[in-house]
Image 1 (tube, rainbow, N blue to C red):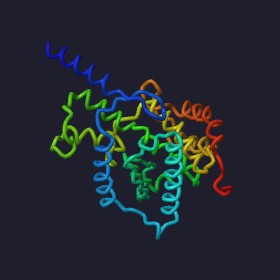
Image 2: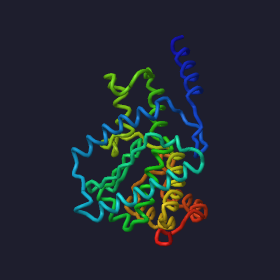
Image 3: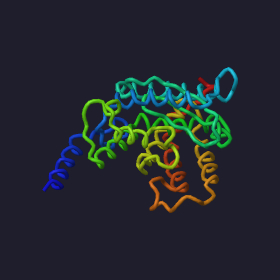
Length: 270
């Protein structure tokens, strides 16, 4: 009987907590307020930066490039959301872009616009436009509330009671879920994966945002081809993975290209 009541309660929560994403139009489960996630992200981000080697703009053209690309993307995204009457969707965003000395080929964005690029990504990106493609992808995960959606799904699956501030109330289960979704230390191995829908959304809107920021979206194809070559055929078949296989990712990106090009105005022509 208890199992039936729990199932019924879960269904009610699921239905009542489903919202439609203002940009993508897809329904998402949102049990946790964005403001709470942003507050926790600030703490996690500052902790990460204090424990890792941040490359400063004053000492590195690469760090300056990361900040420049990030700020251009942030400006383009803000302009896009505002033009759609959706400025409130970015409420609380305080953008930060940092380059960290780490050999991993990786970058990430936490709620509220807290972004890190690892130095190991830059040799694969090879140019500023490709870096914009990556950052557009990662930022889309944040502004499209993908982490919020994944965390909500995990909370519902684990039957975690929602109330108060989950992250400061001494609830280790809530903090573990947050860390498994957002924490930089969880980016490899134990990170709860994005769904294929989320990955395609990040590819799609990330491409558009990069184009709006003045970067050539055509750079996405050679970049993701280089990323595919890094895998050396080690990625599992698509039906065993939560991420699209490289060939399908590239095929999808090609289908978004005409739309992205309609937004593209080279930086030097502005």
